[in-house]
Length: 112
Ligand code: 5GP
Ligand code: ZN
Image (tube, rainbow, N blue to C red):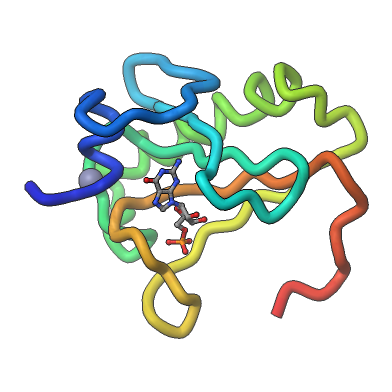
């Protein structure tokens, strides 16, 4: 499958890895929008939240189990924001489900 993030998980495209387990891969965003900007993804290819079902939700749960560890490792003691974009109106640009973890500064209140 021609998917950028599947290729990153496979190591075919380099990334700055910050965390990995059986289900989850996390790496620094190439174009950071905050001092810390990490992408946390399920290793399984799901295109977006639209593909989360009773069968696939375990992969999302594994992502959210990993996030506190990733945030702590990154030193985000003051808090952080988790965002996922789904579809055109949200400007999703990579069609592999991913969660942005943003922090390291006071983030704006407005989210859109
Ligand atoms: P989206 O707009 O789909 O929610 O987010 C996609 C994110 O992937 C963007 O923040 C973009 O900077 C990041 N991104 C796109 N291509 C690459 C890449 O090749 N490597 C890394 N590390 N991040 C990427
Ligand atoms: Zn993929």
